[in-house]
Image 1 (cartoon, rainbow, N blue to C red):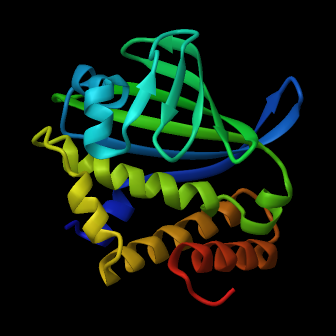
Image 2 (cartoon, rainbow, N blue to C red):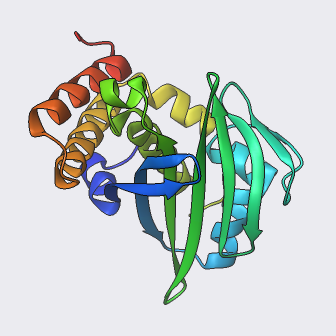
Length: 209
């Protein structure tokens, strides 16, 4: 379905910190440049009809101050929106609230760059699983976006079939290793990063923990 290493290498990943009113949070940031202009990319990540074709069905009021809900996943409130440059929203899942900050930048020659920052307060979940817990999930989401953009087609059925393949397991393994490297590069203890990365990959692939 995809060239695994090519997609992994097309994404840059960074682990960092961000100061919020309630204290310091950890950040997981992914970025990828696509062969489409910024208006089309904005439509792909904000239009309910487009979002369901590569990610998940979404309902709600997708405007500033509105509430959204992704089927079987997160919900939240859109707290900032500056089309076609950026939006900022809460990400409410499993009783926890974090935030997503999505930024789009024209890259010239009809290309555009998407940068997605996921922001969460440090918790037991972060200590146990590290950045890969959300990072691998977002990497999988960007696979869908990369497949959708060239044609605009619905690729979700293809994705449901692919996720059970050995190719998908290899993708998650490479994604997990990339997040491990980003975690270490952020200055965290390498042994702790390794243990967290191994636990996360086991959770995604069903391997031993």
